[in-house]
Image (cartoon, rainbow over all chains, first blue to last red; front, side, top):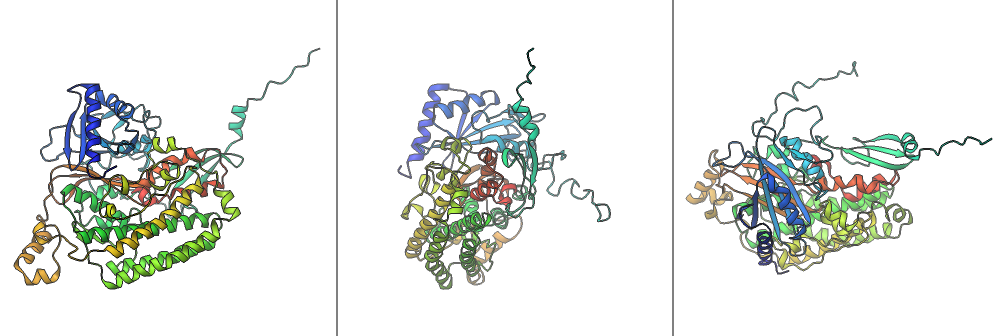
Length: 176
Length: 406
């Protein structure tokens, strides 16, 4: 694979395959620093991911995460966005799929049936942002304790917490 | 008279009744850090393993939204603390991809050198500790001794032994001097002996082989489906290495090979790491020979690097630039956009999804942590093995809890 040009050609190939399959109006495209991003509405997300996996050869889910855009400069799209970084091992092409969700009750279809590797990454997104993934087999908190009620990576959650740590019940040696 | 025979025992439910539950961790010598497993055992055979993580969750990603791009390098050091410089290279690779800047040739080579040193240091710990957990103590000591020498390099180049905090946006903290280069040569000189010692102790060690071979098998299809990367994926026959697939820094100019295996068991992962260390030494030798002269940081006009003291005190431009970067509410400007950039870390794909809002503070710092993803595979590959195999599999996946929980 020639390093400099190949990723771009591979991305063009992915786009051509998708265009043949979907036509116009399903997703919008943007590029930045070699990243190719497809913005897709929630209703077409699974369809797009399936097509990417089965028809474009993006068999590898490299990364899944989310971000909260509450108060982001110039923001007009949804409050939360979940990103899926997919890669095609044969051509070296990679593509980022972005799906937006909003309060209240943000939820997206799970990518677990397509990539079992999405299991823990979706649990982390749920833990940190409260975005539920429909169809995930075991959507529990993963990093925060089960009794935690807030979603700490949301922008309206303060850096120093809301006293969870400060008010934590302490056992003395005599009580233990 | 027909004798009433007893029904067939319900094997399924009886087997379930016979299982017992064992709590493994959060503090256990073989977990090395804090992670916890709930093991459901049938005798000594593992029926089900449920990992519970988060004991070391420190809000590193939240902190990334409140520290600027240079300050955050101290936090990324503490993610995979076995190979801090590689984290720094990954972090600033993402920031520089966002800013769209091209590093100076010398800086690219310096980053390759510290990254590969970190890879050797990480693999020495991983392979050494894998042996330690299975009772081969001596190999671990040989490995750790060489790690000491790598720490000496960190100390000489940055002033800090464990968490160097060495890279900066658009450059590094200090340029390499002759003493640093001497210490790196010393590491390269010592390596073949350490490798030979470890290989003689382990490669034909019957006990070690029996504990590693055929244990914790991960098939190629599963490795891809579960998003595995790095040595774990390569040991299962997935030919993937970001240094080759999407080259960054000076890697295209360096000649090296990517080792892989087809077996996918603990032994394959161990051997892939051992071989990778040899390749890293090969990269280091070439990079040391080719290390270009010239400036290490970007010129002042780029408005990214802090000018050195001489420039700050003796030139107006330097003074202005120093002021602009140091004073609050100034600093450098970033695009209002986002980028995903990853490098090949010692454990696998180490990436950052970085959302910038125009200021010098990130809006969102998402780490793609290889330990987290590899640990999610653990319950699948441990199923059906013995309790004692837990430490072998944990060791071969190289789970670093600080990176796992962030």
